[in-house]
Length: 219
Image (cartoon, rainbow, N blue to C red; front, side, top):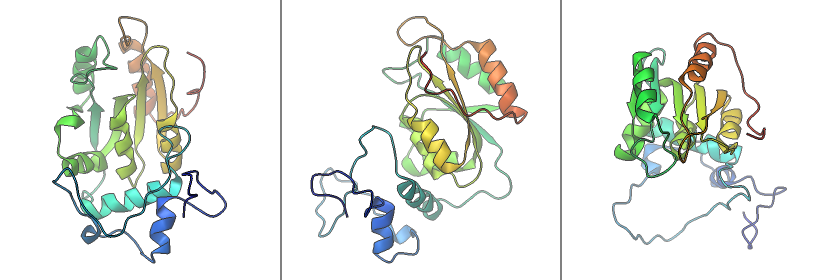
């Protein structure tokens, strides 16, 4: 389903999701998922989807497949989603804000649960993210877990100073999630979060004022 040179044929191939549909699957079931505990595995048949030219961009069919996978792996919570998550990078080796601990405390006072996803088992990460209705995070791989959501979630992405990558804004667009970007101000390597600006953004998030743009502007 992919060109032999690894470049997607956009007229004929629709990504991994299309591969799955061509196998006449009606959805993802838990029995389809195998967790590998060994470093190397041997399989008889496999399919790889081609990487997009721009890092971080995921095809919409692939996103749907992953959302179905999340539904198969973790039971949806009863009732409305009310959990607020802050995906912290304080324990990461880069892109950590100078005042990360202050951000954590401020968001905790607002009812957020601070999580370090690199410390959590995979299924617990999926469950946490599916239970959330608001997610705040600095730019990083933790936001890839947005793919597990099926319903509306509000997302605030905080970029390091002078840095722009709209891959998660695009993902939110595919998923139909409301999205607000903001940028750290200069200080140290990656900058510090302006808590006054974060307060303004959170006021918009909590009161339903939707803002989904200006990610591509030059900061």
